[in-house]
Amino acid sequence: MYAALGDSISIDDYAGGPGRGGASLLASNRDGDFPEWSGRDLRSTWPGMPLHLLATDGATSWTVLRDQIPRLESLRRAPSLVTLTAGGNDVLACFGDTRAALDAVRTVTARLATVLVALASIAADAVVVVGTVYDPSDGTADAARLGLPAWPDAVKVIAELNAELCHLAGSHGARIAHVHRRFLGHGLSAGDPARPDARPRSRDLWYCNVIEPNAWGASAVRAAFWEALHPGA
Image (cartoon, rainbow, N blue to C red; front, top):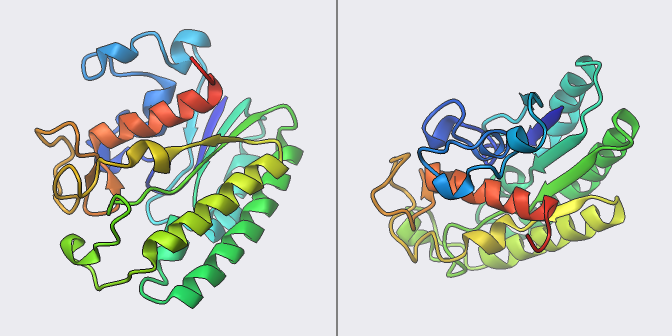
């Protein structure tokens, strides 16, 4: 069983509907949209492997700990694979306030440490993949072009969050999906991340509604998960 925990980085909604999000594509590629990924999905490796998409829109580290982990436990079946994307919404709630955002990073780290301990108890043999958090400004901190108030420290805060996520994963035997690194150059550098289109004409633009992965971004999330599972492949 594959369980996907976390926030909208993992869900289907902004990528165009059911089966189109990053976790869903990892489970079962849409060969018509992404023929280059044909045969590189969990369906091809483990036919019949079910996906439980427990990630939710707007989820924070608290949501994962207090809602999604209990839902996973209620399935009464140990997953063999878990992906986790969380932390971005915790920081976003502090937008513009660097001190509060850095405090949020510490809170995220503590909560997700508890999540990883819980996962070790629920499924001791599961492979766990933790995703980093992307930056629609492509490292520019140009919030004005995203329709947001100025926050020059945003890039620094995201870097701190991702450093903590990488350290946390390493400390708990989890793998890292380098979502942030993979997405660089596909936000402001490629177009307007604020557009609502799930499938923009330019496949180089991977965001919609500023902070959500569109269809092309969802495939990139899947690629980051896949790389974590198959290093060097």
